[in-house]
Image (cartoon, rainbow, N blue to C red; front, side, top):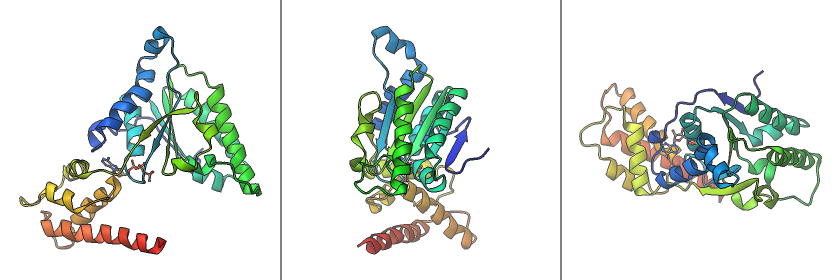
Length: 270
Ligand code: ATP
């Protein structure tokens, strides 16, 4: 049965080549998540335990989900994603049971990757106040820790979590044998932005004078998700004017629109 906040993809199609500007992160993910799944014997031979859980941290929309999906693709693993914040919101009193269910499913479908998005929603440092909601979150976290501890890594299940708020995580979660590897996934720099634009414009018919270097230089501090939105928006401007080619000015309008929205959001926060 479908559980909201959970997504199961038996054969995710994301490959590393569709991820821009995260070369170092890809190397780390390969070593910490992919290698134990592909070659568990390497770890056995030297007598060390492979990393159990890997935490990806960084701002929203920078490619954390893409990285986890790419590992699943590369290892022919089932991709099981849960959004921790949805779990505790929608299934009051059931968070712990659902966590257990997710680990069972992962074993059934192994090899598999469990991806826990927004893990801070169930794993923030213990609050002093103790409303029933907090206790529910606590129970969910306890179950998650129990699953991590009880789980003998036979090399066929990889666990990846993501957060924008590593600073608020309960240190209990980050102990050795739990999530003990951390990979920062930052917003892209100018080179990264050019690469991401290249990926998302690959199938677009661009005017000759569209210069991705120039667009990358204009989109300071924009995330990968925003860059994708800029490409889509530029395409929409062309469609609206019944043109086949996307022009520089379509991109300029798209950048204004998407970055404008960003700025507005910043304003609202202040
Ligand atoms: P969140 O923390 O908000 O869940 P995330 O870091 O998991 O975000 P993704 O879901 O991986 O971000 O990114 C959303 C979309 O943005 C991707 O499906 C992709 O289209 C685009 N995108 C983000 N980062 C990149 C990147 N580095 N390279 C290419 N595309 C990217």
